[in-house]
Length: 244
Image (cartoon, rainbow, N blue to C red; front, side, top):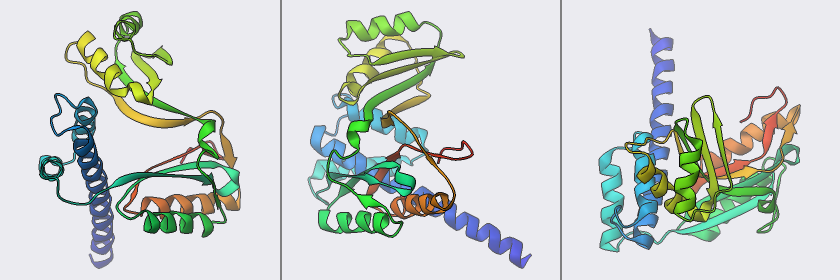
């Protein structure tokens, strides 16, 4: 029993740590969104979308409520967004989005992840011009024309819309997130999003091979372990075809 129990215990600890990271990430993001745009999800559409995503990721209600209450009280940390860009293992491109209350600490931590894996952190704009910053919505349905019409009527600048295997996927500039989300929800009663997020989508991909695969995995692990890191976007594709 000893070894099996210890393996299970280690697994549980890792799962708990992963959940804690997810809760912390959403808590911080909800706090910042509520503080900047107001704590009422009915008037702050970005906050409403964020809360819905948090619930889908099984973030407990008390974590969400605590973040909003903290924003209402005006107390707590003064987080600000920070974005770092650079070239990862195999010369892939990476964008690291953070929320930080200490930019010097965060920059030092992120830079260490780059240097420890033989990578190069760049200046602002060094790689982001090779990504499209998109709001993406995916939902079950077949009426692509109705979706497009609703978005056009709402004056949403639609980048692209796809329909495949009973799933409609809408792409719009990240600045149109709240407007596009509301337009789709009003057009389709009871709509549930399968995909509801803002992403950096790479315009090209870079294949990672050989020794660079291990370095890439270490690079991602080091970044994901940092509390200030919210999201990491990259254009890497592992040689066997499995994206990381």
